Image (cartoon, rainbow, N blue to C red; front, side, top):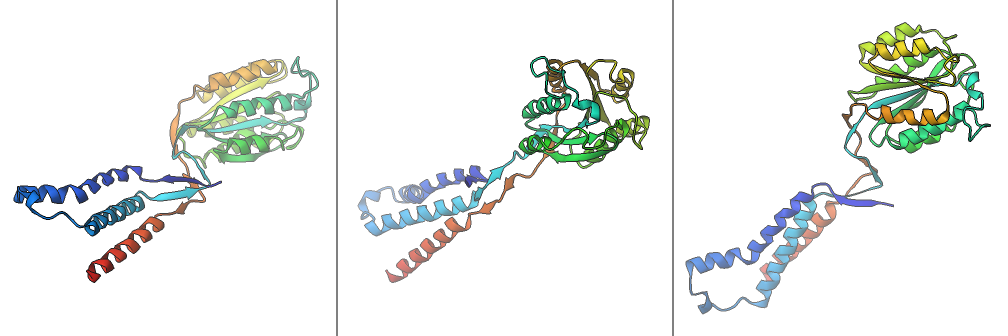
Length: 301
């Protein structure tokens, strides 16, 4: 369904000038000839002529206001961040028992649900997703479309990037995604339940690159603290001026986003309209036709 609006609605203030078509000539005449009552009244054609002039002027103002139709619109100025989730999809993420209420649901499925809830509140962020296992890759590019992110999350499964844990590769892939964003505040949210045991990129090198680009890396260890490298996750977060979280169950994981929500916003510009159509030609053409009619009528008098 198409939407309709004016790009420059403030232009309509010019419609106030229509008063001059009726009042200004009379005021001038009264100033020069105080006894206007001695003059004959205007004919009915003169009244019609003024009405046509008013209509023509209104149509021209409407054309200047730039009427448009469009399928969808995104806010032109967004206050948000470039955020990339770096998700562990190694074999251990298939383990169950992480939730008391959903004992048969895997850690990764619960993580997917938590991220959906998290991005539901990120109206102005540019969000992407990287997954890592034995290797890492970007599964969702940076986008404002949270519905698409939530949809694509469903296609991610445990083992999609291999069974091991390449944290360094995951961070490196996230940095590559963030270089395509335009926000001043760039954030990586790294979620893992294990130790680095694979990959081609050293974690210290990836963290150094993130620090150079002023990228914060918030780390989240899920499961028992003995399951993941607490010291490593703390160091990654500390070195990038961020914070490390641990979540032993799904409720603790769900509460993490509240603190992440306090990140400093920055302005991002995005595309304004989808399938935009300019409609100013319609009132403009109608105004020209009326003007031609008015001129032809005057010539015939």
